[in-house]
Length: 388
Image (cartoon, rainbow, N blue to C red; front, side):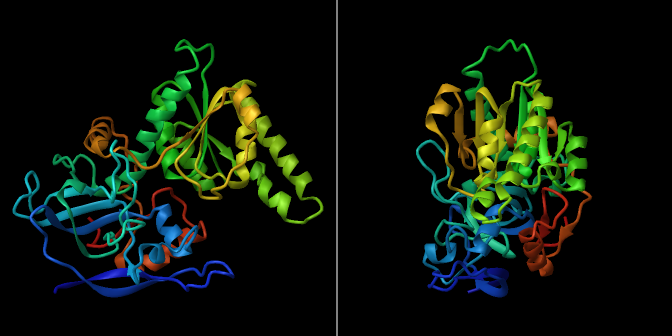
């Protein structure tokens, strides 16, 4: 059987009593089969490093390799691939075609992902392999006019996720308010590339948008995108969980000072009304401040949980203030071509064509930099088959 080069992640120690042991990527050769009649052989071109790749390496919240019951897996869920050969029953795809790989494993009856390839879908491939065999229906061809380079398409999963989350979130917010607004509602977000993409959709619907970051380069990108940059360094101790558990005598005082400053900024941005829609893909110790900043009839929406999965709220307060909590994951499978067309027709893609692309042999360095939050941009790209 033919083999290809891949960066693989082995299962961690079975004993997790002292916490998870971070995994490391190892270069190996893995077997690859010929495509079946409904399958396609593709080569990985350009991918985007995703949060679930960090979750896999950190083995948090679970050791995903052990959960899959495998000795090792290949990660990498988002990017552009090129068709090399197609199975005998495949129609609409041809050799040399560039496509978006939809990394859905199991799909529920409404079209939403239940498992994700290169993460929790057993036996699934990943983009950190030179080539892989995938079902033909998991490929969405890129437009052939070449208007946008493949680097700009590589983070498509964040944009597809943003599109789906905003579709639900916007409808939820509008379900409680009149369409005629007395003021421009504020959408505030903290997180990464998904929030950055989603705020553009909010602006197109007439919302005022703002995004939080503590890095100068990202604040500059936020401003350039049309959103209001909010400097995280103005409220450095805004982590309620840390303050409560740290044991430092002044921790809660520092938290309260940061919370007060954060709410002051929200008041300035919203005319004292609060955040109409809060896009919070961080969670954890920030959740308390998120809820305090929400306006009446506000929506808090999330597709991620980077700083904590477990959240607490006072249900009576959330009911009385008519807050809606939205939780979504990925997007609806059948919407893929539609979202691609929106991106193509409106230019709703990240402007990163000239940015750095990590070559295949340096991917572990990219993984390490991501884990330290050492990257300036929201869309860290890597190349497998060479820069497009």
